[in-house]
Amino acid sequence: METGDSSLPVTLLDLLSNSLVLHQTAPYLSIAATLNLGATSKAFRSLIYNSPDTFRYADLSLIKSANVPYAPADIGGISWRSQRMDEALTEDDFYCGPLRGIFSKLGRARVLGFVHILILDGLTVPADLVREIVAEDRFNVRILSIREVKHLNERKLRQVLEYAVRPTRAEGTPKLKGLYYFGPRDSPSKDSWAPRVPMPGRSNLKVSSAGVMGSEGAQIGAEWNQRSLEALTTAVPAQSDEWYNSSGRMIKRASCSEWAETLRACEGIIAFDAVLCRGPRHDPRALLRGSSGNPEAAFGKVMSYLKPEVASVALGPVGCTSCGDAPEEPAIFGSASAEKLPLLSPPPIHSSTIRSAQRPFIGQSCQIPKLIVRCEECLQGRWCERCNVWWCENCYREPASRLRAMAEQGTDQSQPGASENALGKSGEKIKVHLGLCVEHCLVGEMMSGAGSNGMWA
Image 1: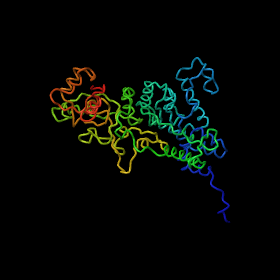
Image 2: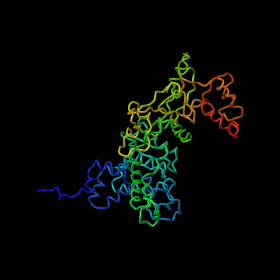
Image 3: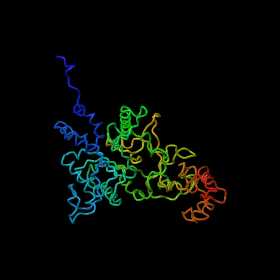
Image 4: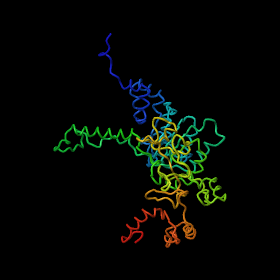
């Protein structure tokens, strides 16, 4: 029997029935598109709601109903708003309403447990909602992103995380393995599919009759070229990772000052998109070696101890300007422990493992880049904030005259006379002053400011 010409063409259902195709395709569909696809037929409904890969990645940041509308309380229409008039309703319960309604809908469809990667960037996410995601059995979230969320109490969030990793916790808890919180959220790309080039036949069509580009075929081709570019931008990962480059300040200092103890408590349990600083001044053993009587030990002097801090400055893979290395040994993916590596942006979409979230981009050289990050306390007086060069403790230590001047003037270098006193009077060679390297950036600032009402005019 010949079946070559009589066979039916492959349908979309046939393609998505292949688990590999569904696994690779589903993350690029929004939640609304996935639910609409499941409503087209019984076959699609069975496929969508019975496959764990369909809802493994859930990005709710693009759903309009997930945001709390700042409107009068009597404007209804969504089920969660009916709770507004309850006198026992707390502020957190009110702001949790939209997302709790979405979670309730996914729970009734029996797909909430399939969600392993949950993106809530930019939404209203109180700490109580994070506690539910971390602690309740109905959630199986492995990677959670809550960057730039609103109405989130940081202190309560730290308490939730520290309680989740307590020594007396139940075995196998918490299910959460990675948390994106410190970095900026990714620029939205899935909602940018509206064509920027007007299609022929639309009401807003304004096509010039002159030139080849004014034809219908050229306009259609331009639109689809734009769509292809947006699809590639979404699918292809970034060509570099900011944490592994000389990106400078990555995290605002005010937002991470209280997080060091939380990150330390979560080490080996929950990974973050930030890491603790491993500079030698945070290591008591290095300080003990420096006070042992050996003048060459621990960078040639007894250093003051610094409490644990979150690393907020990316220094790049090159290392110290003088020696090209770092005293704490750079972290390298594949050999360093997981707590020394940050989660990289954007969150993975096809895998919910921490290893996939920490894997850096490897270029054509096939060489894994080094990770060198520090806190600003470690880099004070040894890091140029403009060109991002820095000197390690082995190669440079601030002259004693400058330290005495700083002690007399306090930490404020902007006071009158601080510049001359801090530069020293004994001819010591200062490498960094006022946050700029003396040899290049400070000289350039002086030249550009002279005679033009600049800082040195």
